[in-house]
Image (cartoon, helix red, strand yellow):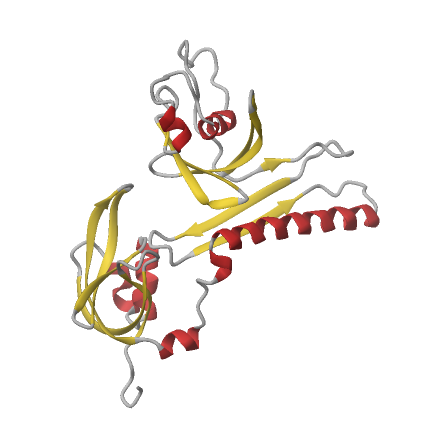
Length: 272
C-alpha cells in the first residue's frame, strides 16, 4: 500500500491510501476506509469505479482524484520506455508510506497502514504504524513528537471504527459459543465474483445450505477452528468434507440473507 496527496484546480488537498490488488489499485481516504474505489486500466486507459469518473465518461482526458493519486505514486517512466502521450506509468510502491515534511534533521517520518479485510466482511482490521528518525533530538522533543504521533494514530483509528460500526463486529468467544447451532461442513466450492474466482464452504444449517466465504487461509483457519486441522491443507474446489461442527449465524445488513459469522467445533459427548 501507499499514500498520495492530490491537489488541483477546484480540489481541496486530499490524502489517499492506495493498495495494489489483483484487479488494479484500491483507493480510499484514511479517514473513510469503508468507502473504497478501484482504479484499473493504467497507464493508457485509466478507469475508476467512483461516481465522479462515471459522470465524465464522455471525456477521455478527464481523470478523477483517485486515478491522479495512483498516477502520482507511480515511478516516473524513463524517456526510453515511456510512449508519447502516455498518461501514467508503472506500478506504485507496494507499501503504505506517507512522507511527512522534512524535519530539522533533514529526515522524514513514515506512516505504514495495514488493513486486513476478508471477502465476507468478518475480518476488518487496521494497523497504523509510524517511524521517524531520532537524530540528535532532545528527550523533550522526542516526547512531543511521540505525543503528536499517538494523537494522529488515535484519530485515524477512531475514524476507522466509526466507519466500520465502532468495533461492533468484534465477537466475544463465550457469547458466540452460547448462540452456536449444530451444522455440517459439506464441501469446498467456488463461484465467479466481481473480482474473480472465490472459494467458499457449503455448510448445512437447520436444513439450509449457507456459504462461508474467505481466502484459502481463512477457510483453512475456519476448518482448523472446527477441529479438523488435518484437512485444512486440502481445501481445493470440490473437496468433500461432511464433517459436523457448530456455527454462529447473523443476518446480512439488508436482512435478506443469513450469513455464517463463526465456525466452532462440534459439541463433545455430554456437551450441550
